[in-house]
Image 1 (spheres, each protein chain N blue to C red):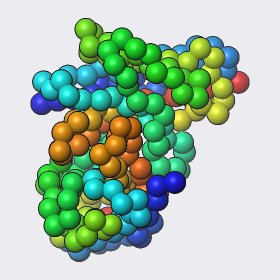
Image 2 (cartoon, chains in turn orange, green):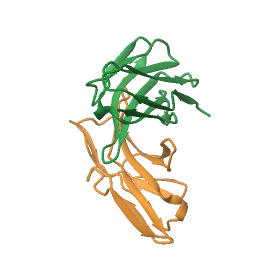
Image 3 (cartoon, rainbow over the protein chains, first blue to last red):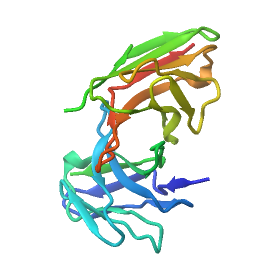
Length: 114
Length: 113
């Protein structure tokens, strides 16, 4: 079946340094979109950014991601992390059909150290 | 801003008991979802619905039922609660829009003893 893989359970980075959170996917469908959601401690997940067309970069709140269909990836990056970026990050795949089913990865916890 | 509420926010249930988690959205969204969140498993889809009076099985539906009596309300029912169903449950809604964003409720922490 279709899946979203986030290989890192925990990523620890020092404030001011860059970070990349990995996301790869497997799907037989072409009519899909990809998302990154962020969940701060004791809060609900909320949308961080959504994929655009193949090989086009999308940005929000200093984070950016590029969908690469050739490598089935949608990695999240930031050039300089802040303490406030510490959170749980989910990569997700959504079918753009009548069901609009969504598949989430297992999540990556980003810990930013001073 | 989209609004999704859940009740109760926290619940302790006994093994074998019946539990009903409720979700209400005021966004006029067609799509609603129930997820459970467990450390190491992330968010897993239990049931979802894209129209009132109809529900679909997600990836882990066993032990759960869902009910969508109206566009605004979506319930998750545990007929016979088990220890393994201890988790945080999130409801979400979304619409058929260009952003396809999901709006999540605040979550319900369920503990089964």
